[in-house]
Length: 444
Image (tube, rainbow, N blue to C red):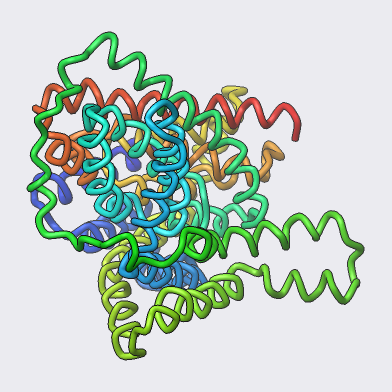
């Protein structure tokens, strides 16, 4: 019965989102109520369970997520993303162009969400591909793969940040280990898969791509954009501060005044606040922008993520219902009895939810709620569990996700071509991500 109830809940969620076309947040709340009733949670306690889930899920995540969105918007609007990509591509030249694209996408991807990063980078990639006579797809594959990896694995992106809270994993460690896991994953899903796809399915590597599907985008003159160094530093500031605090926590003695100061500065909330204030100056005031214009960019950034915040809260409500109804413990016990690695179990649950639901964020949050008890029962490393769920959450991107359609339209692909290229790429990315996590687990 417990598994049947989970199946009914997931089926209802899929039906509401994909068939009824109901708002994802509303679908999550409706599903939470239905599943709670099926689990025989007392009716009077269901609203409290849902409220607890939403509040507990958002918490300080709203601060990190909100500041991160504002930071990314300032970098984007100032032309910082353009400068980063253009400089790296210019320095590396045609021979190592894929390396340049990966580095640019990684730096930009730390500050921007997958869809936003795609819109920021694609016009630049398009111009470069045309100048050096390469198919757009040849540069697009490593770029999109890298953006997807940062979205799935690395804070301050919403899913890994939220799951870290659910699993009580240290955010700085998730970031550091996440970067280590990201490197082989990007190499496999980016340049290596690109080489393979070019050999077995060369027809998708066309040169006559029309970029007009992007709509209007802001064009920058290179001399009007901030310098490469300050752009990269601004985009990576949260990562630098959080990583520095994590390293110093192990290197410097506890109670040391310097260490205490670094820990304060590198705490996620403080790191995001400091980084945002830094960006207000470097990407705004130093560019002779008025504070009103800078504030307007930040307001727009918050408007863009408002629904995403609600969806994250809705995922927390669904998770809490599954926890309060005993489903999470049941599934945890089931996987324990099967003697399966908790990392593989977490990946399987996230991958199944991703294929069913489409949204990587919703799949991650739901999977985290289901497999959280596995950490206590198996003693699994919570940091690696975060990354395993992240890897599963990007498996086999297809028609129920907006990213699938963005790739299809931007690269001028048919539906079949998108399945054979993008859906396959995300599957390779997901599996290689899991293998990278398992490899790291041998040393932790």
